[in-house]
Structures are given as C-alpha cells and as structure tokens.
Length: 244
Length: 261
Image 1 (cartoon, each protein chain N blue to C red):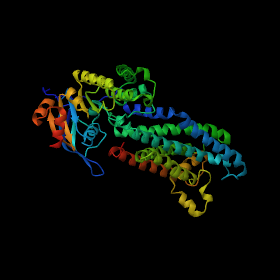
Image 2 (image 1 turned 90 degrees about the vertical axis):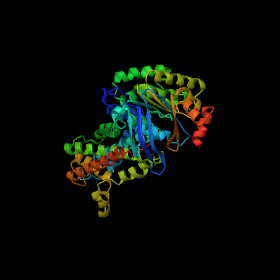
Image 3 (image 1 turned 90 degrees about the horizontal axis):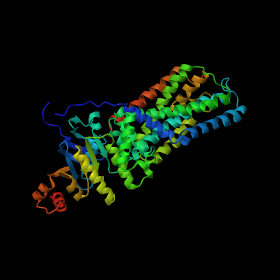
Image 4 (image 1 turned 120 degrees about the vertical axis):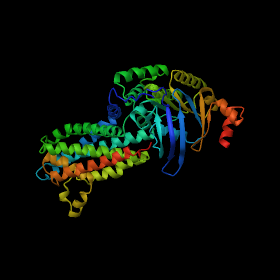
C-alpha cells in the first residue's frame, strides 16, 4: 500500500444545469484533504448547496466526477462515509427524536442494538435525552438544529458536511457548535463547512474557498488570501474577491 | 492509498426503511386503518344488508355477497394508493427524503420500501374489512383461490406503485388530495364495484374496460365468486401487465434521479 492517502473529497469538472436552464455550478474542481477543516463561502445562489447536494447524491450532476475518500460518490461506501447536516431542518415528522436517530443509523447499515446505543450517546452529547420521546416539530429551533447535527454524526462519518449550521442560532449554541466542530476535527473528522458568517470561517477553517456564480474564485488560508487581496480583514477580502 | 473497504450492513438498510414506512402509518392508525375499514364495512351494512334485500340476486349471488369483493378491492386501492402518495410527498415536502438519498440505500431499495409500506397497509385494511364483511353477508367461501391470491398480489403492486408515482409527481397537498377525489373515487364508482358492467348499455360496458379499477375488481370477484364480467385469464393478464408497466415507470423515476425534494 502506498503512503499517500486519498483526498476526503475530490471534485473534477462538476457542472450542474437544472431543468430550467440555470447553471448553478460550472466546471468546478475541488480537492479537500483528509482531516481538513474546509470553509466554503459565497453569496446566496453561488452554488454551495448544489455542490453539497451533488456530493451527497441529492442532486444529480450534469457532468463531472466526484469521489469521497477514493470511492465514487454514488457508491454505498462513499455515502456511508458522509454525514450531512442541511441548512433546513429536515426531520421525519412521524417519528420521535430517538426513533429518528435510530432509523438514520439503520439506513447506514447499523444493527438495531448498535443504532439504539449510538442514538442514546448522541442524544446525551447534544443534551436532547429529555426530549427523546418528543416529535421533532415539538422542539425549539435550537434543539432542532442540535438534532440535525446529532443525526449527521450518528453513523460516525469521516467527512462531515455542514451547510450553515449556525444560521439563526443564539450565541450560546453557536459557541457550543464551534466547540463540537473543533473537537471532531481534532479527532480526525474532515469538515466541509458553508457559512455566511465570515468570522466563523476564519476562526474555524484551515482553508477557505470563495465561490461565486458556480466557480471558485479564490482558495487558500485566511492569511494567504488576505495577503493576496491586500485586505485588512476577511470582510474586505470577501468583498474584493467577489468583485474581482 | 486508502484501502477500499466494501460497505457491509449489519441489518439491511431496506428493512429499516420498510419498517419506518410501516411505523409511519401505524402511528396514525385511527386514520390509516380504522377509518378505511369502518367506511367499507358501513358500505357493506348499508348497501349489502339493508338495501341489498330489495335488490335481485346478481348471477345467482345475493347482492350483499356480490359487492363484497369489489368493496374489498376498493378499500385496498384507496389505502394502497394514498399511503405511497402521502408518505413520499411529505418526505419530499419536509426534505426528509434527503436523509434517505444521502444514505447508502440504493434507489430500488427506496422504491421497494415505499411500495412495501403501501402493500402492508392495504393488506391490513383488506383483511380487516373481510373479517367483518364476510360474516355480515354470509359468504366465506372462495371459489377460485389461485385467481384470488395472484390477483390480489397484482392489485397490491398496482395500487402501491401508482401511489408512489403520484407521490413523486405531486407538487402540493392540493394535488395529493385531489387525486383521490377527482381520479380515484370516480374510477372506483364506474369500475363495477356495485354492479356488473354486463348490465350496462354496450358502449358503457366497453368503456368500463378502459378503467383500471374494473380489472382490479374483476380479479377479486372472480376469486371470491368464481364469476365476473371477464375471464380469469384476461383479468390476471391485465392486472399483472399494469403491475409490470407501473413498476417500470416507478423504477425509471427513481433510477434516473427524477425524484425531486
């Protein structure tokens, strides 16, 4: 076996044109190393969610190839390695919080016993144990956000994709999510984060890519990008990169 | 290079999704089970028992016994269709389906689990309906068991697949509910549930044969009573051809990624 490790995510020439003719992503190339904390920034409609949807088999790319830890993204192996927390609170309204987590584990091939044990673990981790028998729609907004994150982590993915995980949450929960993300990354989980909070990306991510109209216009560490664009802070960097 | 480790499920993911589909309708059992059984049994009591006494036997069979196979078919058609439609539409609307698509479940497993959920619900409702309807109408004999078994299996596949297809196409709750009242209900009423189409004028008799529900009713009627408006072979052939056609359509929707949240 050779010494190099496959990238956590490799995207080659990804293009997605929707049925109405709108091209959300055009010829996008992206390589995220194993173990990275990678931030994806861009305005609404830049193609972030389309890229994430393509990686997670929710959106079917028009052309291009994607692989996850060396596996074609369409394979069961690739999909078992990804955890996704979407921007929307997309929960199963017919199941209790605990059942939802257990069934998610099941969809990822876990045994009933393992899925139950792991569900109790993440309920505890996200301080949701007291709401285990409630329906997701009965939870507060912050709890629902925690539940979506708990579900993404349940099957212990190696690549965690978080689409604006702190949008609309209070300061305490944001700090809690930051701590959790840092801990997971330190333990070896690769994280792909999209966010509109520039300081969040700067604080958490080793590397940042700026996406505009479906294309990556800049990529690098926060400090290298600031130097390249002669920007004093990430806000200025963002404005200049988007205007260039 | 990272070692290629094949995905191996400790318990098939398909079984989990099928179980979830069954749990979904069991959680709302008053609506999903009791309601359809009660309304069908009321039809049997009112039309079969109360009014049926004043109606002449049809081909030597009392009117009560005559309508039971059709009502049995209609009950399964309604719940089998509606189960797939509502389950899939709600999963798309709430975007919960994304959690399923992003998992290692294969497209045909998702399709099969949704269809399986509709079939289980239709079997529960159908069996419960018969448990009340047969004693009420004094007819528990099965004239053609083979036709009944294969016909019912075909019917279950047809209605569950139609439900899933409709659930994949529906864009709003209005679409979901209007399909039941504008499409399913009229097709049921003109499908020969309450009468033999041979008693209709020739043109209506011919027209009835373009109604898929007519064939679903026929396999049940021939199975229970041994006679219908068509031959057993023709009824089975049409029902299974429909099942194959709808399964292919449904598979195409799932396999080609046309199912959108």
